Length: 148
Ligand SMILES: CC(C)(COP(=O)(O)OP(=O)(O)OC[C@H]1O[C@@H](n2cnc3c(N)ncnc32)[C@H](O)[C@@H]1OP(=O)(O)O)[C@@H](O)C(=O)NCCC(=O)NCCS
Image (tube, rainbow, N blue to C red; front, top):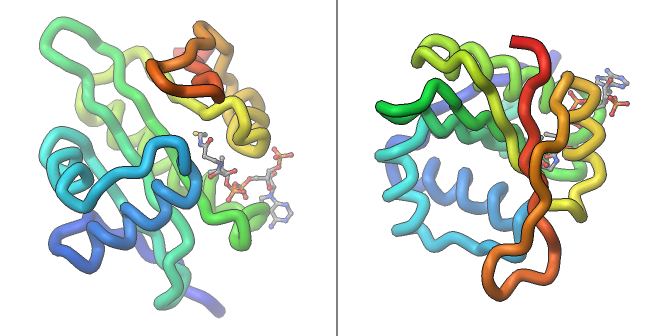
């Protein structure tokens, strides 16, 4: 039976794995390794492996001093979807966000990521905003968890 494990990126190899998943899923916002390293200092990042195969990653943006809102984003490479890995990553992220004191949970989905939008809606998120960032052609969708 395959073993699912999670790791906080702690060096170039695991940062590159996180970067690979992020950039495969969000090709409109390709991050450099330096950009990922900088994020790893501000956000709680995880990488997921099924045995030794890279399958996904997650981001938890913790609440800031003046808000109680955290953002939780799960990402699973398309070849590995539909077997509960997203649920596992999301559940860990949600738990972490609550541990960090969040009372409001948000997520953000690129509108072209239909799987991501359906997953968020199935997990109780409601769309709050749809917007284009400068230079973008594909809108982002912000969503908020409707039950605390
Ligand atoms: C959102 C995302 C992480 C979900 O990843 P995933 O691994 O496919 O998630 P799961 O397998 O847990 O759930 C997906 C579906 O598979 C189903 N599923 C889970 N385990 C299953 C199994 N063993 N057999 C059959 N179906 C199963 C779930 O019920 C769910 O069905 P639904 O879409 O009808 O609700 C993935 O689609 C993704 O990376 N999207 C782009 C990133 C994104 O937009 N993230 C924001 C969301 S927080």
